[in-house]
Image (cartoon, rainbow, N blue to C red; front, side, top):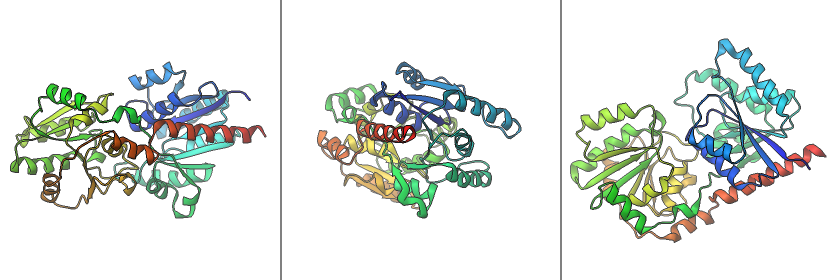
Amino acid sequence: MSKIKVIHYIPGFNMGGIESRLVDWYREIDRNKIEFIVIKNNNIESEKLKEFVSLGGRFYNLPHLELKKIKIYLNKLKEILKKENPDIIHVHTISVAIFPLYIAKQLGIKTRILHSRTTSRKTDKNKFVKTILHFLAIKYATDYFACSIEAGLWAFGKKNINNVKVIKNGIYLEKFNFDETIRNKMRENLKIKNNIVIGSVSRLCEQKNILFLIDIFNEIYKINNNYKMILVGEGDLRKKIENKINLLKLSDAIKLVGAHSDVWNYYMAFDIFLGTSSFEGFGTTAIEAQATGLPSVLSTGFPETVEVTDFVKRLALEDDTKIWAREILNMKRRNRSKEDTKKIDDAGFSAKSVAKELERFYYEHAKEKDN
């Protein structure tokens, strides 16, 4: 059997969750048997993309999808799919999935995966049009994937839920093993050695609800100024967030440290993890936090699936910031150990095992094509 060719259609290739999972999978699958080719809707060439290419991956850039240039876009997409003639197309964006899936069906690509990674389109523009395109896309997919049951229900509905394959957002567990030495070094470098540290890891965007998170911290700081906050991540709202921090006179208490590829080291430095997302298809950061043994306070925008351990508390976004603050102030810090990582492993969130599961799926479905 020749090498299996899988095309992944994704929005972009920066430092987000989709591209991180994609590179994780490609690191771990048998690249002598399976080849990944990416079609992406931008020209950004990030460090993550460079790593993908170093593993032998290939990619094509498509222009941003615009209505007035849709014919050019579709012709280019068709040209790429015809040239590569993949065994499988794996589409990671719901809103415009109809285009690659429809063309793939026209060209006789038998396995057409639609992968849901969200539970809402609250922050989308042109919601009405995207909703119509969403439901049309379902008809052209042969296989339904989701990062959680909740994401599967949102994308494919109750009538299809039994046909949804949940592909967990696996992480490299060995990197998240709690290490006291790393913790002490990070806290010294960040000048938070003697503080109680609340941490959050996310894109600085509307979905992640960071302004609400800062309001919560403001309530905590009024009661106990020994608390500090570390925000790991970048995004469009950075300036707005900085302005709010300055307005509340919290610039000495909150550090924005930007995006980091060694994010596990920051989890070591935290005492409590805080996530206030409006919605999440899954919420990998909650799993990463638990893998390092961090007590975590999360919004109900995170699905119940993320509650793997007994040191997670979920609160409604409708709750007053004082309620959130009180919960965090009352949260007991705990002794962290490598046993915490084992709990996450036992729950099936290992990047290596998820990649092998996908490898089996691709292999079996490519065999079906040959038969």
